[in-house]
Image (cartoon, rainbow, N blue to C red; front, side, top):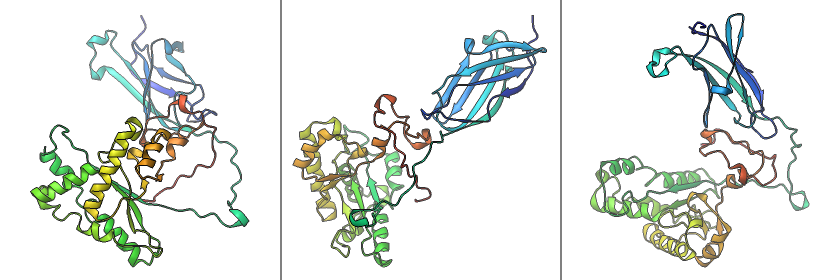
Length: 352
């Protein structure tokens, strides 16, 4: 019987690999070498969106000059561009049930998987009719929401809720007015922002004020917000635009039209009561979730436009450059990527 290994001598794999046209890894081979036979060899690929385990028949054993080589072919389309940590390991005990943590020997290496480099279209300055320059408008939207944490008892409150609301004293009181006043004092005649507030949040902030919750932090919580809501830009637009929303933060694409209409109406009423202004005819749909079947109900509720997150469309494009779990979303569903690829991606850095 061959000697059981004592250490892993090396891991052999590409240091850098370029993704194929699918935007994921091409097929490649990796192997690790041990100084003896490994009873339970396996390789783990650590990527930002999860782990991939290679073991059993996927690892082919061979012997070269008394060293044991374990080789695997990694199929194409498994990994997105990123730094991949490769973990090679094995157990020194033939009876894995008797093995402890010290019986597993591990080695690590990293591999950089880079995006596919395609020929980029020449960048041209877009122009409107008559070669007039196209303007890029940069908007700021502040979204404020808290749900009822016990939907069977709207008066439920505990220390955890005290902490959640108490940690957001600034955002729920003076952050927005302070920002708008900086636009005014900074000489920005058109400067402003939009904001959305759920009805469930406003009701709970009112209760905090009435009952002295959060140590009285929210007494007169909306005083500065009501004042800044009256400020206008040089063209007469609100410096702070309270946009339409659904009272309880509903996913409107999943509820009946009559519910959409009532949610918007209830929300308009509480915005008028809390801030002394009418909610805008523009809507920030909860989670920016939108479907065309919402349009008739939104029109009936007085909504003329929605703020739409273009990433929902881009994720449905072929070759979407998914950045991994740090993007904040799960990988796009390949079955939904039916739109043609686009090449005009723009990623902004350090803008917060």
